[in-house]
Image (tube, rainbow, N blue to C red):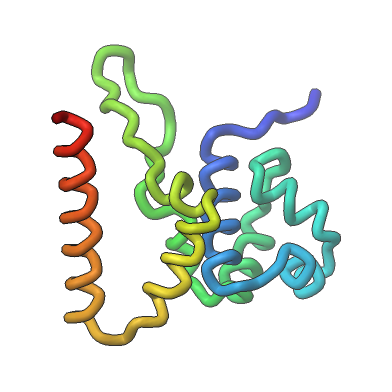
Length: 137
């Protein structure tokens, strides 16, 4: 009996992809560093194949993150019916799936000044609010 992957496998794969892209690394390069093909990296990132703990530790080292990066905010198990929290929108995955989002993340992470980063966040929030008001009119 073949084990199927879960939503957690998909979420971890998405986080691997997000981090890999944010540092400008190709699937081929990550695969090479892990001794895998880029197709295997693709399967990990899509959640088609599970990533073993040992392999995830290797990926974390290569991508320059702590292993907790892949698990932060993931809830284990299934909540009881009636007590489940509403599922949040996967904003990060949505942003990372667009060319503009990728460019924004890459550029933003290169800004060292906290003051400048805060100003950019305020600008984007203001533009989003303005767009929302225009749609409401």
